Length: 168
Image 1 (cartoon, rainbow, N blue to C red):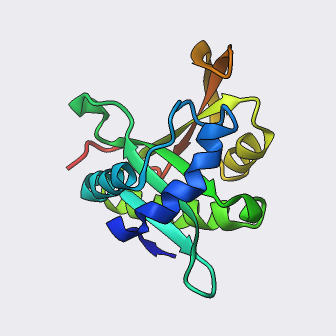
Image 2: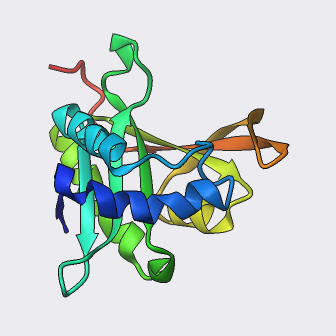
Image 3: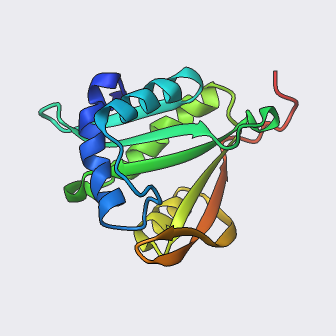
């Protein structure tokens, strides 16, 4: 596992495309290309983190990132997180491993809370997040339109520590 660099964008785009194209797991309607994902990697690395998981041969098999939860300054100490694995790598422990390192990086950058929005139903993602200590905090009803129907998004939240003193 390592920090992502813009050169990883092509492979990240390949991993992400089926989630966009073939499901409502992502509510993006068009799969972003490598240039766009390269910009996202750079942006995430500025204040948050983007990691890739590599196979023994060095090929990228998954990625996870954190980014702004909301744009207003008071939300600076919270991050939205996501994890995506190559279709052949799901349920292999890769998501758990990526998130473990991602949470350490985010906590090191002062992030206190992480949130994950999951288009439901998605038993695999909901199970992973619950297993990692996320708590369901609410569901937005019919907030995403894709594949000819409305979708709900469940929001899961996890504290990265117990220090609730004022931020530096």
